[in-house]
Figure 1 (cartoon, helix red, strand yellow):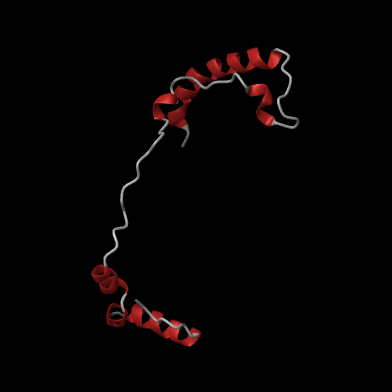
Figure 2 (cartoon, rainbow, N blue to C red):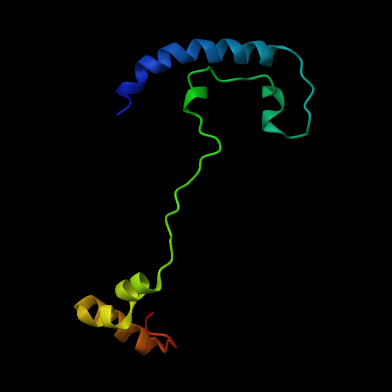
Length: 102
């Protein structure tokens, strides 16, 4: 499973190790007591990961509400068409739901 990462690991490990040892060997006062990242202030990953970082991702507009589509997919008649839909209506009826479907 991790065979594809072995070549990447051999390239990245020496870079990260040299940067970390240089910072860890220098005396650094912790900025906040008990902070894990206080001694890693100058630690920076190699530039391989910078190209894969996605900031300001604009997500698609997945939900565009439509009464017609909602009723067609989740409405009472759509539920009554199939066996599973009838089970849903029956379960909601037994539970005492005020609204059985859309």
